[in-house]
Image (cartoon, rainbow, N blue to C red; front, top):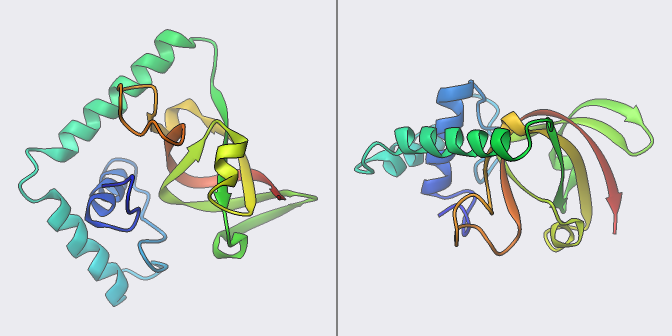
Length: 171
């Protein structure tokens, strides 16, 4: 479901997994989520619960996918710690700005799960501003080459959120 709707039931379950494993509360699910007492946050929680109901231990399955992804990175690139990834966005001002580093460098707070691409041109198809980040391998939940036939179309990487230093440009 993530591939079709990053604000749907399946995405809520995925964001919930990140929250339960890493303590990163989602910042957006259809609308900004800033207050756990807000009705929008309660709607997210309801979607998360519906996304997990009857899924045969989905969170344990996601644990395995994440562990396998990390195993493959360690096996294939034992000396590597980061990947240069790109994300196309339409509204840079929708991101929570933590620090302005000058020029085209910012520290922003990304949602608990975000999609990136290794292909800058592909990322540009999803927005007129491209964010570029050096993402720690430990924060990659899944990538398009991990399992054949899954998330292949956009050279996609699912990245665990938090604070990231990004460079940006308008194209």
